[in-house]
Length: 492
Ligand SMILES: [Zn+2]
Image 1 (tube, protein in one colour):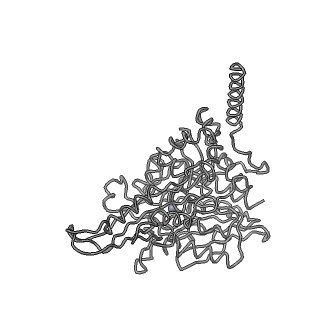
Image 2 (tube, helix red, strand yellow):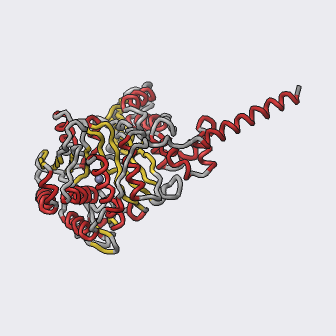
Image 3 (tube, protein in one colour):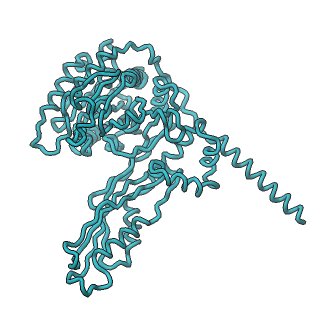
C-alpha cells in the first residue's frame, strides 16, 4: 500500500516537473507576421554632421512649455520658421497647418487615399532647466554644443531629437522625389510637458472630426536599453500602453474646539486612519493582464533558466515571483497600479481641534484597473469612518488601451528596430510616464511609443535631468529607422 502511494506521488512529481519544464521551454513570444518587408537601412547615405548641426540649431530655440498665455511665444514661432527654412523639399511636398497657433501638423498626402494614414508624433516644447540644476550641466543647456560625438542640450532626446530626425528622414526622401502612397501625418505638439491639452488633444479632435483613423501612431515613450534590468543585456522596448493617473482626495471633518477634552476621533486621526487603510488596500500585482508578461515572453531567450521557469509557471511560482518583483520598484510598477500618499493637511495649532483635515493619494493605474473601481474600493475601506469622504481631486486619467503585439505595424517597428540595433531583442513594454500619444487612441488602430535610440544610464539621466545629449550613433540609427519606416510603411 505504502509503495503504491509512493509510486503515485513519484508519478505526480514527474508529471509536474514535465509540465513545468514544458511550460518553461514553450514560454516565448508568438512569431511576428512574416509578410514584413524592411528596406536595407544600411544603404541610406546619412550626412550625420549636417543632421547634428540641425539638431544643435533646434536646441537653441528655448521652447520651454508656456505655462501662462503671457509668456513669450517667439521661441516657438522662430523654431517653426526654422523648420520651414531647413527642410525645403519636405515643406514643398507636404501641407502645413497650425492648431491653436503653436502646434504644427504636416500632412504628406499619399497617392492612395484609401489607405489609413501613418501618424508620427513629436513635441516642440521642453522642460525647463531649474536654476539649482544649472551648475550640474557641463554645457549651456540651450547652447546646442556638439562634442564627444554627441549633440548636447535640453531636448536633445526629449523630444527635439525625434522631431528633427523625423524631418531629416522626410527631407531625405522628398529630396529624391519620393512620394508616399499612404498619407503620412506629422503632429508636433507645443505643450506635451504640460499634458497636451492645447496641442495633442486638439489635434486628435481635429483628426476625429475629419474622420481620420490612422493605421498606427508612433510617439516617444520607450527606447532600447543597453542594459535591460531583466536580462542585463540590450533590449528594444516598444511601449504598447501607458499608465493612467489620478489623485484621490481624502477629507475628514471633526468637531472643532479645544484639545484638552477631545472626542475619541479628531479630523486628523480620521484622515490618518483612512489614508493607512486605503494605502494598505490590496491591489492586484500580477504579470498577466498587462504588458509585463508579453515583455517577459519576448525576452525569454535572454532570461536565465530559473527566472524563465518561474515566469512561465506563474500558477505555481506566482507568490514567490510577486514577492521578488515587489521588492523592485520598476517591476512593481509593471505588475499593478501604484499608490503613493503624497500630501497631508489639517489643523493650525497644536492645541486646537481642527474642523477638517485632508490628504492626497496619487495613483498610477495599471491597464487592468479603472479609476472607478479603485475609488469604489477605497470608499468601501473607509465606509465605517464617520465624517470621512473620498473622491478624485481632479478627473482621473485611465490607463490607455493596450496595442497589439501581433499586428503588421508592430512587426514593422520590430523589424526596423532589429535593422538598426541588431543586438537588441524587441519586447513590448508599459510606459510609466505620460506622452501625447495617449490622446490618439480614438483615431488610430494601434498606438506605439518608441524612439529608435539605444540608451545607457548616462543617456537616461539626461531626460528631464542634466547633461541631456544625443549621441551620433543614436542620431544616425534614428534617421535610418525613420526613413525605413516611411518607405516600408507608406511608400510601397
Ligand atoms: Zn517628451
